[in-house]
Image 1 (spheres, rainbow, N blue to C red):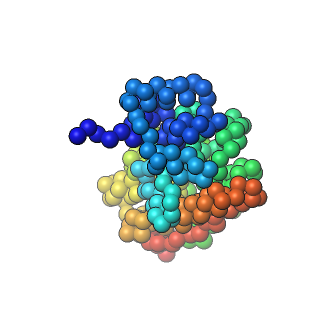
Image 2 (tube, one colour):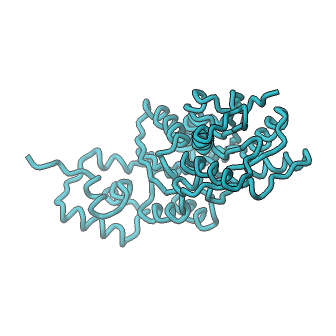
Length: 337
């Protein structure tokens, strides 16, 4: 028996999103003539016969949520997407994930939008430039931002500046005075605010982090938010002979890699050096890593609840939610007396 064709086959053949195929099948006005021609040609070549369920996808209410995310392989985004998945489990909505990548997420996201108009859109950690804003507004679909903010959209945003501030205050309270920072490769609003909050708080205490103790690993995977980058950063500090009294890592993955490198060098945590992470991913508790909690799972749930409310009423005022950070204190910053 020949394989039953679906709109997924048509979408693949035409190199468009499945939501675009469903719109063509339902004569939606939100599809360009060029794209419609590509889809019609794919339908003809495949001899595709649309079923009722395929047409259902483009009803007035959204059926498929497009989730744009820089990566879905890191513990941080894994935890957020678990919240998304679990909140969608009991409702008549599906979701597809588009990986924008960490190297140039804004440009890749624009390429995604060029492929068709989604039913509803959840956007993670992508700065909303004027160009992106213009494209999203022209689509006229429900949109929720997570990890970025723009006054015209519903958003859920982490207070990264406050998170950096709390991290610095915690380490100062523990008696640390000689600091280093492991940074990411990418410069973004999120990482800039996190580091600025940390360094501004140290400045108020009369402390400056020397340039030689601001370090980035070599590996560029996940923009330097990786175990490999944290591991390499320790080796760089060792080679420079500038190992600080305590290290603030801009995410937990860096901190985990750093702890492994320190163990290889027989430098003990926290006896010889303190380590602090950021995110509070699940494994951090088993390593005794002090960190800043981001409530990732709960944010995924909040994002879908916000999007569902917007689907029901797109005219409601935009809701802006800021997630307050908190310190989770564990062994890694217990400075010996």
